[in-house]
Amino acid sequence: MSKEHTNKRPIDDLTGFQVLDTFKKFDQRDDIFCRSQWDSKVKSDKAGAFFSSYFMPNARSRKTDGFSQRDYALRNAAWHVTNIFRDINRQATGRKEGFFDHFTTHDEGWAEPYSFDSDDQATHDIRKAAKLFKADLFGVCEFDERWMYSGIYSEATNDSKPMDIPDKLPFVIVIGESMDLGLTETVPSALSGSATGLGYSYDSVTLITLAQYIRNLGYRAYASMNDSSLGIPLAVQAGFGEVGRHSLLITEEYGPRLRLGRIFTDLPLKVSRPKKFGVKEFCSVCDRCAAACPPKAIPNDEPSTRIYNRSNLIGVKKWTVDAEKCFKFWVNQNTDCSICIRVCPYNRDYSRWHNRIWRKLAGSPLRRLALWLDDQFSNRIRKKSNSWWSES
Image 1 (cartoon, rainbow, N blue to C red):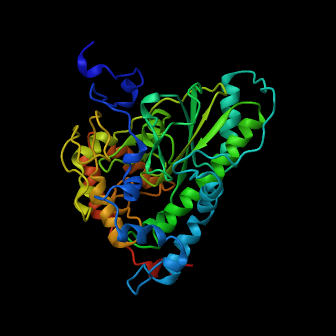
Image 2 (tube, rainbow, N blue to C red):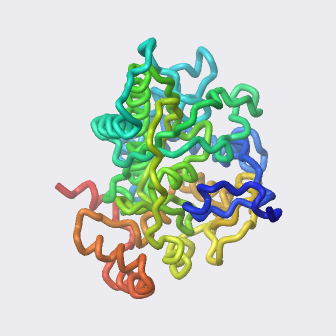
Image 3 (tube, rainbow, N blue to C red):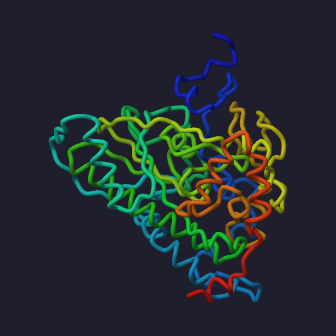
């Protein structure tokens, strides 16, 4: 076997991931948000004010469109449910659930596992329950240790601590919660941050509820959101879509407007098949996200193994975003930014037939025509927040 394929897995032939011999598992301590707590290169009073602004007394509203009191009020309300679950055990145990630690808000399940007729039936039932619990997307992949964090961040020590999810759970359920299209049109604004907050809040409720259902069936289930593992690689393996130039997941159903969650379980399930619909080829001729990014954090060249800083994944050939530049812009704006989502040609309402036709065109050799059509007929200019409020 050649050196560059040492870390290769059979699933990579289906996903198109290029994992090289230099690959290293990612330590969550190096995540840009974690670094803002301990790394002097990222940590600052301004970064601290950014995080505290998600609680209304510290919101620092201003007259600029999209940053008024009512904009921050909606954004912070959208985050409220997630914050409750995040902090439910924080004071007692130091766990920041959903972000640094998996969710533990579960009752005891059934002692004996329910006997399904087949893996297909089990998957059907879990998918149906997930839909009932408001998951917009559902998929299953096999456990892949490469995408688990080598350590998870400890807020108490500013260091890494061992993973506390058992390593003998063979399946990962991946769920996706879509973000509101209208709100993302107002990026960058505090108002647009409501789409992110709602995505996480729905994610939290769905994950905890679905994990409890699996536990009630007599199986083990550990609900995870931004903690424990990288989400996008597992979502690709679970058949959600492909990774775009902006390093975000692009799906057929919602484009890049998606928040992800995982449940690690020993319930026998049927794995999903990864899908390709021409995203990589389209992104190779499209640079709209890179051109629109104010801090120039998104590459406009071909996928590579280039590393900007310690917040980047080592040993995977892909499009990589400069996390430090990206986060600095967030801090300066005093809210999360998703301009790359707003301007992405895949960011569409696919309930409309003409957008489904466009998606097929984008995945074909006529992708440059699809890009031209998007430039000509899609209004991707930032929408004023006041106009969002005035809509009925």
